[in-house]
Length: 155
Image (cartoon, rainbow, N blue to C red; front, side, top):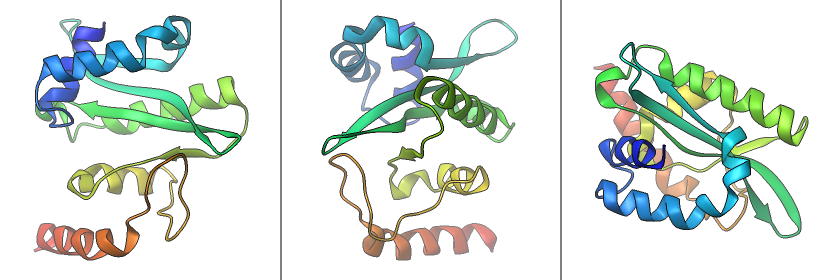
């Protein structure tokens, strides 16, 4: 289902196009086929077509392996229906089974402010200074942008 994954991720702007996202998938995930079978989740519409996806993966922080959510996306026409919340909840459940009762991390960007609101509702916390893997924590830069986006949505 790598083509479905690529189409969904490109449709929400995570990649410039499906070809770019497919190449990423092939390089990063296909070498781990057995892991993918347990960790790559999809939601299908009534016609059986994939409309959302999330990956429960891991990242390494120094010598520590951290549970991590990768590449969460729901096609725009299906957003706001609770599909994303269900995907995040199921992904966390799967990670707990596979990795144990560990913290789950995710990295996001300011233009995903709707997803950030969902993450906060599902129990995630914004880290002011900490980070995981090789990600940079841009809290000081991101906070004013997020506040502006959320304030504009509330008007």
